[in-house]
Image (cartoon, rainbow, N blue to C red; front, side, top):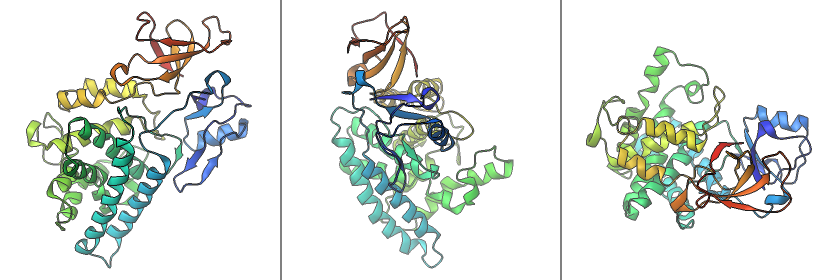
Length: 359
């Protein structure tokens, strides 16, 4: 199978993987032949890439950092947490112990998925249809943050503090009007000011119960601070910002850039990394940024890519030590003809061949 932009999908192409709603139901199932109506429906739902069947790549199987069951379970937990924090009968002291129990279980599921990967590269699923951007973002940010924490050699206690802090970093958003959560148009000055209150709101909420650690609560307060002191809410800089919050800040920006939004196309992993590096040592700690980027699969397995030779290929394998030089399965020759046999190019050995773009 191979992953392609919805813009280049043709009627008659067959889906190679289910496209799933965030309630667990399949919008379209694997093997479904696409037609013009279905392609337009996917575009309308915000799906910008799909996996299609291809004989030359039938042995290539993508993998994700998180499996579907874990992702769906986490979304359900996030929804439940919002219900608890909004319940007028429950005060924070009653709600937060329940939140702590919920999110410790969620954290263990996320950590288990990540640790089963072995040598870790970040591959996050994108074939989900959801209008809950806040929940989708929380899951991605948590997975990304845990991977960095594991790479730094954090203890299980530290990973739990970081993971729960990442999951609940935006909990203060529930204190704001829901119209701000997924707003696609530009914010007014008043709305921006409201939005900038959510880190402090989240911190104050989480500090009302000691069952959530101080450091996890601090993640909510500090994850929008920036290394150069130009973040909010307190304008902290450099080591004034806890390392957990610095990690979450990088993960938060990366996930936001690589997520589909109605007002812009999402960035490819490579484009998002370029953006982050452009902000390195001003908005973010350069050492943490380098660690983060070393874990990202710039061209995930099964991605369709255009080479500088004019050939079209599919990423067959990504080696953790050579993330920018993957093994590529050629599917179309430079003259435009379809490749007749399975043939791989190892870009770590072909130094004059480079990836120009994702297709």
